[in-house]
Image (cartoon, rainbow, N blue to C red; front, side, top):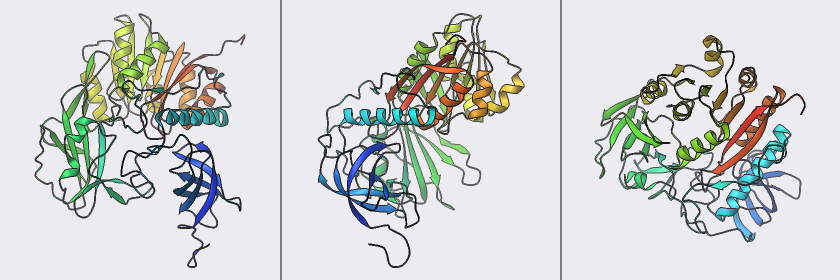
Length: 442
């Protein structure tokens, strides 16, 4: 049934049998006419009524929600969160799926991306095919790990805080986010109004008792008087330049990993899961096996997490260069690692900074690029440095797979690959690939 006004198919419903899981938190299905649907809120093997949410007659594919389940999968559970479901909050993709099955889905997506974009089987990538749960997150079906230490709430016209709906600017008002860490929930952001605000971001550090709220006013909006139950620092985003400025309290939070304390300023990047930083540092160090006296690069280094860990292990005869584009993160990294004389942090984009350093070789490289990945030119530049091992930390399996292909073309192959479920209830997954040069006789 087509809408009379135009070619839009939004609102049309199809009864479909659901196929495999796909990257992005949905599954693939086809209508009887052969149209491809990307369907949320379902599982492979189910028969559902799928209601179109995006697409028209000319679209290559349609997006849809499973609004009614005709035949359910044995891996389906009742979503623990009342704000999860068709047309509701878009933050969680897999509330309706058993935890173990969520990890299996993520493994299926990683395997599919590796094969399609890098031409690698799990065995060729050095991966056993599993996705490891984060420490403390192995819960029975129906329970949700409260892991998210940073939550950005959107604010509606009445000042009510909520969360964005999937692929939408519309706001789902909530009275509690099930995956929010206790320190975030204790701030009670949802329980008060935020007039004239566009967003409210709540941060609960796990390495300290630091709590932070970052306010983004709506155009022309004035900051409210913030009175919360817990001691909290307040920052605001300047609508003119996007800068983050302190209102009261500290302009940073203190986090801790691998025995070191890290200052993270003005809403800067830190892993969102409370166990993620330690999990990833441990895995990266196990993969690289740093030796005394080695030279290492930490690229997209943020506030210096991996640079600090490597510097401790390469010792006084070793050296570490970190590169980061964010000015504030560079200031934090230099502060955090000020006791390590053999660490240098440079500000700028990786592909611009490396050539001007004059570095022509390195023993070890860590890169933790943004979601889009490092890209072909950066990969080629890194491969030319001849590192004995490279650790690639990735939050997007598609970007990882693309860059692994570029590394392969430049003479590197994955020695091992590990995957960690550091974003439970969502489709996101963290991967770590350890790369080494291909030997001439291989």
